[in-house]
Amino acid sequence: MHVIADLNVIPLGVGVSVSSYVAACERVIREAGLEHQLHAYGTNIEGEWDAVTAVVKRCHEVLHEMGAPRVNTSLKLGTRTDREQTMADRISKVEGLLRE
Amino acid sequence: MHVIADLNVIPLGVGVSVSSYVAACERVIREAGLEHQLHAYGTNIEGEWDAVTAVVKRCHEVLHEMGAPRVNTSLKLGTRTDREQTMADRISKVEGLLRE
Amino acid sequence: MHVIADLNVIPLGVGVSVSSYVAACERVIREAGLEHQLHAYGTNIEGEWDAVTAVVKRCHEVLHEMGAPRVNTSLKLGTRTDREQTMADRISKVEGLLRE
Amino acid sequence: MHVIADLNVIPLGVGVSVSSYVAACERVIREAGLEHQLHAYGTNIEGEWDAVTAVVKRCHEVLHEMGAPRVNTSLKLGTRTDREQTMADRISKVEGLLRE
Image (tube, rainbow over all chains, first blue to last red; front, side, top):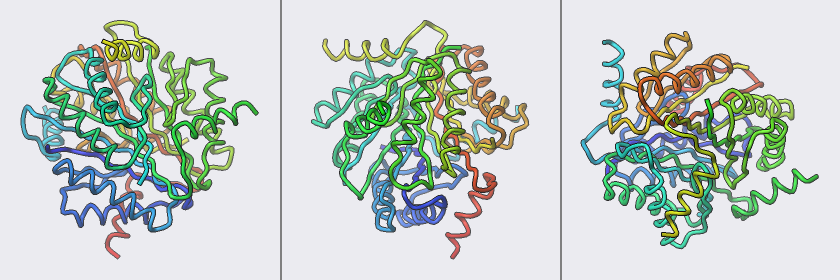
């Protein structure tokens, strides 16, 4: 089952700056070889369901190993059976409509 | 890794009433034997990470089998290593503070 | 425009325990006189759109006043024009289907 | 109060393709003159709190006017008092750490 996901991971109990934790999670996504795109409030990820959820689990493990006592994730997961669709398809379709 | 989760599953392309799909997903959670509590905008679930994410995957599969061409999930996942905490602990701690 | 909402507010930079902040936000909701229900991963709120979003803004202001340098909210907002529906309606409809 | 937001609006009861509704909401954001960036699972928006939440309300109104009987929004809202930060700052900081 192919999924388009949006991941936002927040470590708690590590102070106000969380960018090093976000970067660590980005490295986990890269190492998994999944298509992804960082944005200002999370990361879009695309791939097989199990590969995507494995990455989210690994992010929690890595952030705890880095010293975060609490990790909070907000994750969106979108699947469809009517046709194939990539992250790029989604954006280009909306941008096409906006040019009309 | 123990996780407290909040799951909100929305089928698209099946009309305006989605309660039968929400109920189907509730049955998936029950059958998995996980601690859970339905609320007005989703379901709190508690358990081992892999058991919780397996339930979410199964919900997508079941809703697609029921005929939903698209399924969109919003999932929160909270883990902590400093101490054990249940869903009931979270609520009673806040309610205790509100009584002070 | 009537809305059913789900609010999860997380203060950053205040340590690992956030329950006093969650309780402060609950007080803001109570004082606004809005129908609400605390759960293990947030609070369901129901009311007019402007009253609900005003409460979320006030929560951010109060948490900053309490010393939180960063506040992160995850908010769901559901509106419908086909018929009236309360938070209690949503839950009872799903529970009814589960008893069948 | 300056806010960085992430908005994902889903119309229900209008079939499986929702891109025309997403595009309509993008136009609302553009007309408001707010800094924003479309991604594969929503739109990052930046501005004053009241301007951002007014845009979200207007999106619900416009989608209902277009015929959607239900509209479901998932919204993230981040505020901070320790320093100013833009959406571009957030991304460049993480990307800088990834180049190290």
